[in-house]
Length: 360
Ligand SMILES: Cc1cc2nc3c(=O)[nH]c(=O)nc-3n(C[C@H](O)[C@H](O)[C@H](O)COP(=O)(O)O)c2cc1C
Image 1 (cartoon, helix red, strand yellow):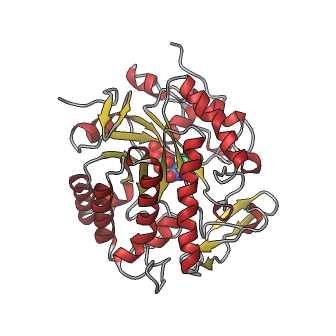
Image 2 (tube, rainbow, N blue to C red):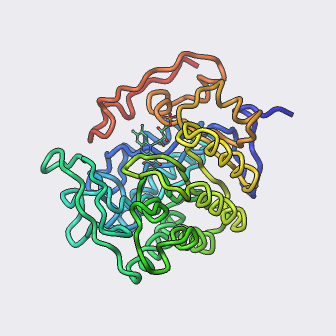
């Protein structure tokens, strides 16, 4: 039977009312790094998605590299997130928290006192980022983590996942994509460590796998998802020879763990040509859980991904910002509103909760 975006999904011990996922999107509106009422309203507006994945949320003061991103490491943040989970559940939605540690993609002006910028190795991301107090700045040189610090950071992730469950989330997504800390470990251009967390594919993957195993043990495999972006150069992730081998290995390990879903940004792999396409096919073959695909999908491409390419769900990013009732609009072939990029990452309500619903 052919699957559509509107076919409910029962797989891996979870149920979703449709296959439309709201992709994680940082919005920089958590003043003081604490989730607030505005965010609860925003996510509740989008609760007709089969699954919402929140904006990237830090498991540690060290992971707050961007201005005004939320955390999930103290009680005020847990209480703040409860407003969102309660509002989403009240409208019948499901919501996972994305755990994002910025690692070297960071500036100290954004971070709380006593925190520090850490990464697998002292290699700069060499990018630009916004700070509220100093305007645009260069990302700063990170400190290479000691082996003990790596292990302590794994524990921060596990605690963050437990906190997310306490805050009422249906599960968590480990952000291992787009050049943030776990991705910095996977890539030998940013990881030149000589301990058990660097070198071979197994060693570079160890940080990610210890986090995934620890979270599965703490909150359950049916509540744990992970995001990968093979070949994606975003945030200074240079290409490397062992990409296929690394993500093939990760897919095998995710399958062994029985993790609920793998959320794959597939655009860069598609652009990488034959090897990238082979990797995408291999991941689908190896990993038997829920495969969510993303980046640049519209309704037609999404239907093809579900029906022909054997994806289970498709996530949509920017379309969900400006179309809070995106599933309804898809179902009724309504026109989509284009988001105003000038209001991305700004602190107040404009361009966040003020996009209209279609007449229904
Ligand atoms: C404003 C904005 C913020 C984003 N923040 C995150 C984030 O916090 N975590 C993440 O994994 N991806 C983030 N992304 C990437 C999206 O999840 C998604 O991969 C991207 O928008 C491509 O999907 P689309 O073509 O449907 O928009 C962000 C994208 C946008 C537009």
